[in-house]
Length: 117
Image 1 (spheres, helix red, strand yellow):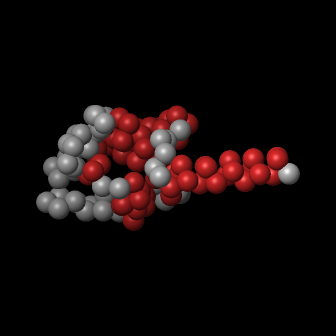
Image 2 (cartoon, helix red, strand yellow; image 1 turned 90 degrees about the vertical axis):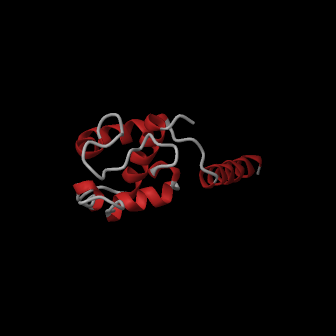
Image 3 (tube, one colour; image 1 turned 180 degrees about the vertical axis):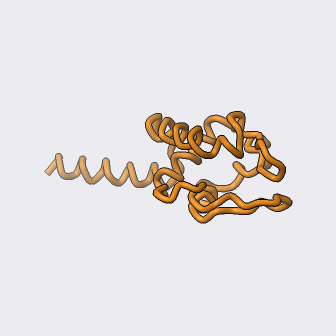
């Protein structure tokens, strides 16, 4: 009985921590970094400041990364055109097999790499 209660309590705590925006795991951030450096870096740059006109600067405190994780992951999955940009980011960053989980990992990497919080 104690074991079942502990398991249920542990699962509930995990769900609550995840829904409250718990810190990303180092594995998730590492996976996001690999994906970012494989594809995203071509337009967004290694420093996150954008390499092309109209590409957002991820290092600005009031910039793209001020949006919620779910919004950013959705933009990656569906594609997005920043106001003032002459081109749109393709859906899934051009990686047809990209999953939502991988998109979320990219967001966590960007938050760690490009924000000062």
